[in-house]
Image 1 (cartoon, one colour):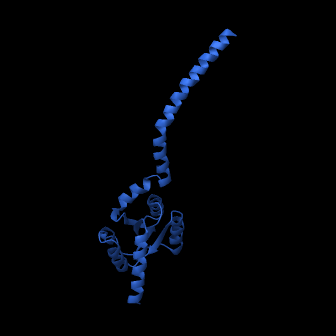
Image 2 (spheres, one colour):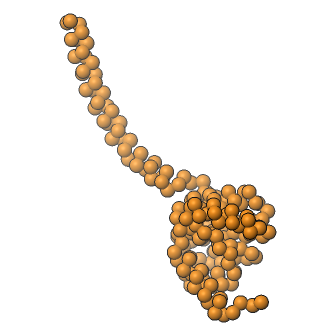
Image 3 (cartoon, helix red, strand yellow):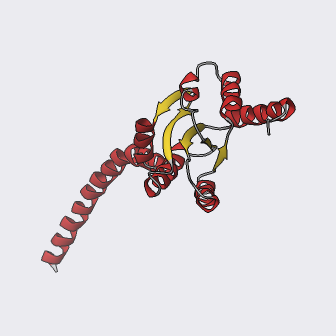
Length: 176
């Protein structure tokens, strides 16, 4: 049964809003997945503040074109039965979850590409992004790098004082 124009307009508006709100989007082909498999994926994605939506290709292409005219890279991936993972949180964590699911179901679920910061990314680039540490870990590493020189200086300065106290203690022990 064909979809009405009003329904398509509603879907297009909804998808355009999701694309605007999302930090990133990942497109995947889902041939042959069961409802239980998709539910498992959706639960896994909720942990990284993301959601998986099955989309109608033509409606999604129009929504993408309206959202970002430069995102034709993502439109090329919209072939066959596809779904889009809308990432509202950390893109690395979401990419990691999606790629882990794709490893579990390689013949049924294939990541074809994505969109990040208005630019298209390939499946290989998504794998590199997934291998990155989480945002919190990266921030901790940066703070550690900033604090390390100061910590070394404090340790050296404390060492001089410690040695002076040990020398004075040694002289006191000798006299007693």
